[in-house]
Amino acid sequence: MLIRTALMAALIGATMTGLAADSARFYTPERVAIARENVERYDWAQAELEQILKGQPRSYLIGHEYTSAEDYAAQPDDFLWALQPPTTIPRIFPHEAIAECPVHGLEVRKLNAWHPWRLDPINHPYQVQCMMGNEWYPSNDFASGDMTSGDYPDDGNGWVAPDGRHFFFIREYAHACYTAITIPTLNALSRAWLLTGDRTYAHKCGVLLARLASEYPNHDDRQDRLWAAPYGGRHPHYEWKGGGMVTDLIWETFCTEDAVLAYDAIREYLDTDPELIAYLKAKGMPVESADDLRAYIERYLLRAAAVALENGAIHGN
Ligand SMILES: [Zn+2]
Figure 1 (spheres, protein in one colour):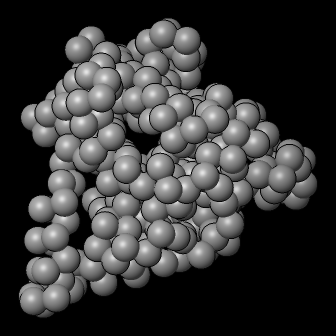
Figure 2 (cartoon, protein in one colour):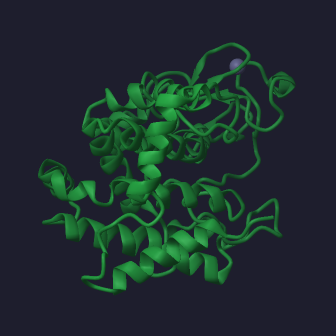
Figure 3 (cartoon, rainbow, N blue to C red):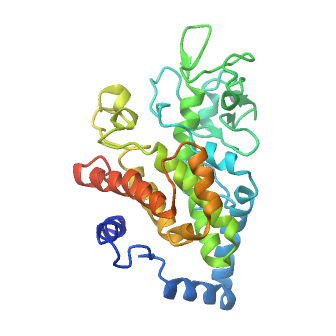
């Protein structure tokens, strides 16, 4: 319900030129003032801010709301820009070797039956770590364009085991990074900005959100990037499952909602950061102004998600 409300409010704002189109819909000044007051007065609110700044433990693809705003805000803009993997990398892969380690085999399922991997994009971008032996895959530096180094290289099409099966480390990473890192980082940065007023959080949030908008699939000119697109619109193993955007139709409900709320949090801030606009323009985005950036995010994130809500590509279970 909330996602529809936020999306529709933003869409109405986007089409009502001049009618408070640049003001937040969810994070109103009154709500932000109350939140800041709560942080000063209450331990529970202070603890929430602490989690936003320092992060929460994570053991799976979902289930945590924040990474560390401090850690991610300390990274260069280019890091935030590269953080969300390109959606030209498929997030579904054939189940030739799923939840299986090249060294530890199926034993790793004792630790997690679905995703026995850890992610640490700051220190190990585009790699996953085995929960059992702590080793990293793939062995090549994918982010730097190295597609062949080491014993377990993966150029996005999977490392080929001696028995001919593919281990899809890069696709696993692309799948996991969106729900486990990108969205919780948008949450942390946007809320750290609202609660502390430190502009660094808003700036870094702006880079990551713009990147997500530039990678977010849609049913218009990015249909080939939709979650199930590489398989004709249906998951090859769970055939009841169609739709989806960056991730599947069910998880996308809360992921997209968080991304939309992060936009709401920094919507007005964008007017005050010409360096952000210049940076994004240099990255190839068609933006000359904060208005252009808002229009881009509203078209390629909010509108694309609203269409997906209407046609069922985003749909909860
Ligand atoms: Zn292992």
